[in-house]
Structure formats: structure tokens, C-alpha cells
Image (cartoon, rainbow, N blue to C red; front, top):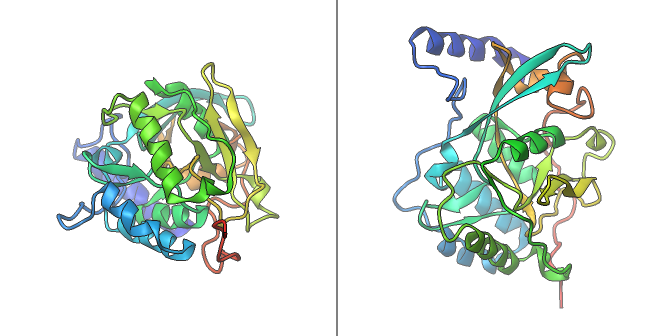
Length: 293
């Protein structure tokens, strides 16, 4: 988040607080997600639309639908996460943030599909809504706070991992785990997260992934930047985080906390981050990644 926007955001916060609308149950500055339109395709219809497209077109379709608000309503109802953490100097504080209850999906509450996407597409969606991507530390805190912890279901590695068919197959597995119910509480454990990391400082054309926690809390996926920023497979998910957090009772932009040497350990295992977003301009260097036969 650009520093010049900070006074405006804090002003909005103070206005909300003074009018009595703010409670700790709600994000300080709600994200600006458009209302889903009546002509928006449902999840399965959208999956059919992108099944036969090339990779670049697929990403553009995902970006377009999410930007225009074609997502289930439950993703707009953010979950509050609170935890104790220490600053670099050792002071213990309470951190409060808000996160989407599940990973980004296209469709309605009744018919939606979780859509893996490149980190560049995920960042563009986050930018459009005024949200942030998480760090590995925040992924762990979300998992600890989640009311529903699903065990991971990895598929056998193959060239098909990046196809829409595998996206749909994995989504069906998650639905079976949930007995077909739409998630109403914070849900975790069912995908790897695309995260922010200092490992990207010298490798800006990579994607950082982390998580997929097993029962007991240990992640299958350590922090990794093996894949390029064009890559997304069925196991990846984009979970968005509120752009403002509370440090004790002090409202602060998450982007500023991530780059503050004293406060960054509250939200990052790596200390202050060099970059708080994926680079989106001229970022994708590989145009085709589907298996060719």
C-alpha cells in the first residue's frame, strides 16, 4: 500500500469509529468487492468456459470474474483472527486481523469453484479490492484460529495438476469433506497458500507457496519458490487478508507493519519484507505451461 494513502485510511477508520459502526468483529476498512451481478456465471458454468482456453486467457477470465464481484457471498464475510505476538524488541502485543474464510472462488454460494491462479492474478485481485496476500506466519495463525481444519488430500504428481479438470476434482474432494455444506466458519488445511516472502526479493519471477497443514499443525509444504510466477496447480489457493490490522488498539496498514523493522515479526517470520506485493507489470515471462501431447 502506498504511504500516501495512509492518512485517508486512518481518517476513514476514525469516522467509522466515531459514528459507532466499528466493532472488533468487523474489518477496520472493509474491502471494496463489487456486488455479484445476476448475469454472472455460476462455478461449474465458469469452469466449462475456461476448460478449453489457453493459460493466458484462463488467467484473464478468472481476473475479470473476480474483479466484477463474481464470488460467493460467504467470502465477503471476513473472519477475525486475534493472537499474541512479540515485536522485535520483545514487547508482547495483541494482533487483530481479518481474513477471507476460504480461498478465492468464482460463482454463487450454491454453485462455486475454488480457482487456483498465478500470484500475479491473485495480486491484481487483492489490489482491486484493497486486500493483501498473507505471509507464512499469517497462514499459520489462520490455521490455528480456524474452526474447521480439513486434512490435506494431495493428488499424485502429474502433468495434469495444472488443468481445470484437476481443479474441479480437488474441489469435489473438499466438498465431500464438508458434506456438501457451504463454509460458514474459517476453513483451513485444504490448500497451499500463495504468500509474500523475502525469498522473492531476488527472484521476482517466482511464486512463494507455503502451508497445506496436516492434522497436528505441521505443513506439508515448507516455504518454497521453486515454481515460476506463471504457475498454478490444483493445490494452490489465494486467501486475501484485510489491508488494515490492529496492533493492540492501534489501527495500522498491514503493508506498513510488514515493512517496519520493529513490528514486522508480528506478522512475518522473516522480519521486515522488502516487497509487500507481487510485481504485476510485465511480470509473466512464460506464456504456456500446460502439458502438450
